[in-house]
Length: 623
Image (cartoon, rainbow, N blue to C red; front, top):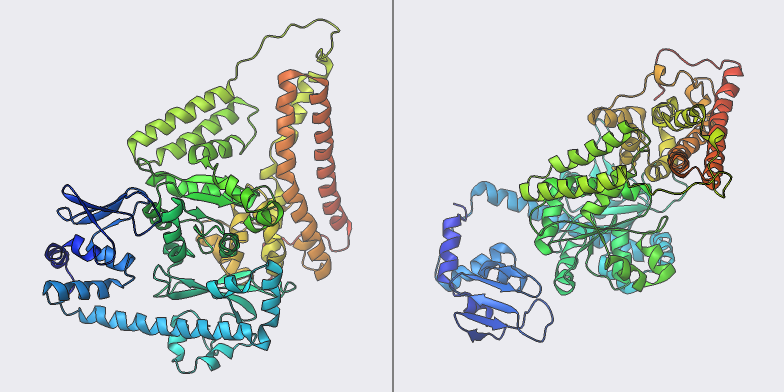
């Protein structure tokens, strides 16, 4: 028999809530309720109430809320079953015998918890051992003191494919594999997942180790991801786990805030600086489940992302996940750091007060959504403007709450109208006067050339050529993933390949092609890049030359979107006011655009003129 809702309701009814709470908290009678200073946060005047009739406690200061079982787990620190057993003993109720299948599953999970605890102890011991010198040196360069290292449980996984197995030989091989500590490959001996990495334990809401994250220490090792997390296991579901939640939850009751950053090293840097209410997702975009977990703590969590293109994409992924879930008073706030800085960089450069100042003035979800879509593409034509409106309304349509949907639609349409159709001031013009327009410089042929120069950048063959090159030379993805993350590239296949690094996908052609297929994306075919006979696409190109050519192509690809956006803005500015300054800026950017295209043609023509420079026409790629 399991613990049914009816049995739990009977337990709650038999136990007087105020009598349980009064054992550790002084209560004062106030009408039909009791009052006290909240035990979950420091306060001078009482805002904590206990209502025996309704069977719950509530703090109007920090939001702590729950029944008698929740009190035992949150305030006393007991597990759910331990709390139930203690309360049942007081109430004179017999706890039902557990379901045999549930008991077996609980026993299995208990064994895995033992495995993870033993692994954490060993990793921590290795950090202190001579083998951990390199990891200790890295921690010192990050400025983490001994207290921070001990508090967050840093460890070290030594090199060697069988080191952990030997250290944890008391546990069966099958348990080590099930816990995600070892990798089993068909027809090969299993091997340790984490090798030569700085280790961090990932804990559940009760502070138990359920997974690990490992950072590579060899800066020259490019055939493995920089960060590697445990896979999903019976203990660990990365989409339902937030790093540091068991520490940040109690801290958020004091601050009334929860901060979400991009990675666990950001969490630790903030904690070391005194900002204890930060959590992070684990190698994935923020999920619907994680958003709901955050809303249990505060109504408007603050998402803090790096100011680069990758950070903006992460913010938009979180926003698109949150829109269907929005409900009254529950939303997200967004903080974008200065470009090129993560939280640790900002604190080291400007101090913790600068970080707190940013966190105190976050942008609203609606503001970030509007700014992202407004800046996503040029608005030079009526079709461009209609595209912006369509994108905004597509987001609005995903909101399930009808009141919030209507308010978003009204606000975004008002912003769209003001931006797309601004009022034009009437200016007096005198022939020959200062700032007079130059009609010859605004002729239709000139405008047409400019618009053609701006258009089509994302549709050209360069993106397809780079994707094909990365599939042909998969080991180069580790070298270029950071640049691809930071760039705002239109082809979704590039983002998928860059994300593969975060997910620990093997850097092999077949594995990367599978990632594209799983996302409904097709690998490029030769027709997409036939006009660009680049060296890294040709079978007989020496490896070193292929790597050099691919690096040049990636550099051009990353540079192009920023250049096109700047040129589009300069073109709009020139068409709007026809000033000499706007014309000069437009011509400067157009020259850069033409130089860009010239460099690309030079790369292609150099290869085409070389012996054996023809592209393969069968679409095959080397593994």
